[in-house]
Image (cartoon, rainbow, N blue to C red; front, side):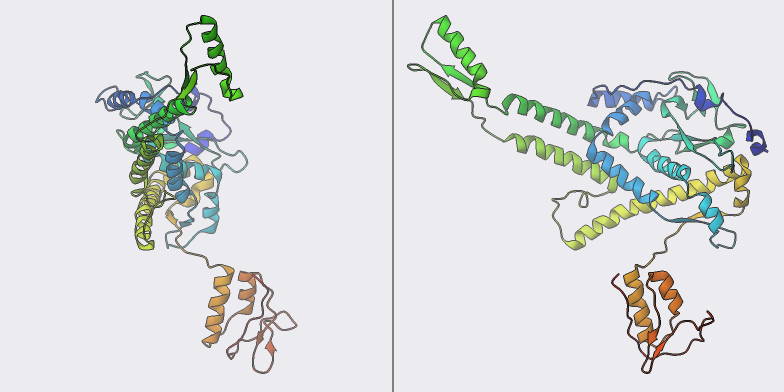
Amino acid sequence: MAQNARVGRTYDNRPSNIILPRSKSLSVQTIKKWRDALALAQLAENANRAPLLELYDSILLDSHLASLIEGRTLKVLQSKFKIVNKAGEKDEELTKLFQQPWFNSFIYHSVMAKFKGATVVELWDLVPETLELDSVNYIPSENVLTGKGLIVKEVGDEKGYPYKEDPLKTYYIQIGKNNDLGILKDVAPDALTKKFARASWSEFVEKYGIPPRWVVTDSYSETRENELADMMANMVSNHWAVLKGNEKIEVMNSTGTSSYDIFDKLIDRMNSEMSKRILGQDGTTDAGANGTYGSLKVMQGVSDDRHDSDKNDAMTLINKELLWRLQLISPAYSKLKDCRFEWDDSQEMTSSELVTMIKELADSGFIVDLNFVSEKTGIPVTGMKSDNAAVPPVDKTGQKKKSIKLQPVAFYRTKL
């Protein structure tokens, strides 16, 4: 079996180890470069995604865009999950096998593939003591030829390791379709326009933050002109001048639309467009957004639809591609047969909510297990008050007392 080939051996010649390190440079990106990179990535033969991926690295430096993507990835990473057996019951032991950093990394790459396009990850390194998976390695997408199913040594190579065929098929998972370039290809023009607007605004501030000024004089003396030139050069720090006769200092006054209206509104519009593409709306991402509670609730529901879609896609990927590979990679996952991954949508009540519900149940005549109350709330409950006396939850021997029907009660508890 595949796991027997892995135990006690090192594989220095695995595909991820033969990839040559490649320095990344954040070159200036333009709309034209985006068009050219998109055309190269969409070629029917010998498609090259490297220029487009370089552009992605550049636009992901935008704080607003990065925040939108983090909002979708973190929503999935923070969701509870469970491994259920054939009977549909949660298996605590198997669930703990997935509550590990490697699984968080797998979930992260599965969501990021929606933005950056087809992604290949490697399941290779095992923990020697437990034989559990140690990490999930990302294969640089520029070194992956998805159409041919190859991992290549250098960008531009046409021959490499076939990761979709045996014996490597077990250890590599492609997330996304071959020609999937991700959502970032759609928001790139907006991110680039925003970057240009910010650069232009910075240049405007540098040139006109301190308004241009000049001296008007009727003197034709070269010596006097040099004196005035030195005076103007030092005026930024001195803020005063000595003038003679008809000499005067004039300052340029900018007229027309303010720079704020020109640049800031353009930046806001680009942020709005990116929000709509990533989350389907921009009402929940703009601190100054106007709208009623109902309209904002609807917008949040639109975002939640995308979050639910991300979770469903991740669940499908795990059940179809990950679980059977884990069983072949290591005997630590042999019990996963006939099991499946599910998101745990159950909600846990807070201590305050739990106490409120218990009181309502008791007031309605139901009998409450006081040991359960203490365990769930962390509050030491010594008994329940009835009309005659307090009823202890257990007797002196440590055995639970028989449940009896109590009258409506009042709880004595410490501050939560």
